[in-house]
Length: 285
Image 1: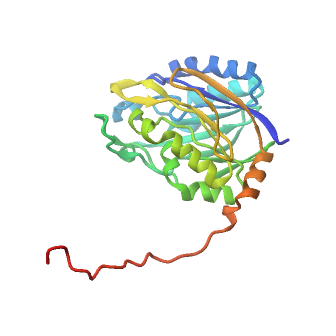
Image 2: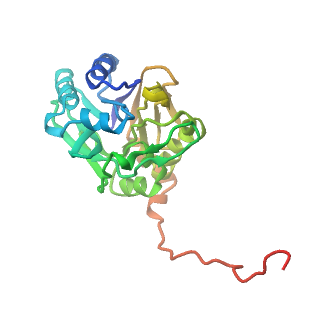
Image 3: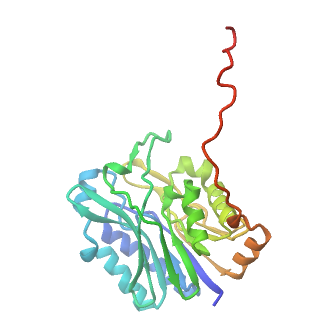
């Protein structure tokens, strides 16, 4: 099977995990009605809680997580594959994992991925983001085997680290997921460029469900869930409203793109850059 219909659900997550399940489930059902075989949701689809202590109190271990259980049940009920973009999994008294789950059409967990790169930045929107204060970084790149082929798993800020995507593609990934909660400021400047660049560099489809709108404590996300083909064309874009997009993707286009530009096979080992001009006098000396 080289063709499948994928969907990105775009939502506006609140502080309440069960409320978020109620918000997202009808969109997943609608995606199924539109013919989607694999449905994806955004990063932190279960909860956006900016206050650290409240987030830790609401998070649950994987085995007792009500959001994960609800999505597993829904995937089984609908008979669809479901990428839970990420939920907050309690891993210790003072840390969570920002973890993505790929569920099969029986609701079984096929693969799990914990976000590797922590979003510790100040982007100029009045907010300070220090993901490492609350989350424990993952340390494993992950590829899932599906009926359609191999699919790589990443989350949001990972999109800025091309080496991760290259490793996934060179290990056989033909589709890479990048569920996100991109800030409005960085999204307006960088979102589409980064999505297209990772697709072009790897010859993969990049499928990125995103958060949108204003959340707790004034946090704003960009929306624009996208499906990008291996040649870098945006085949679907959700804009800024809550909703969903679908597209049929043809994995034969992966081999086609890589055949035209086989850059994944052209790596060369290089050492540290040589810096010239370090002995030059400063101007005015």
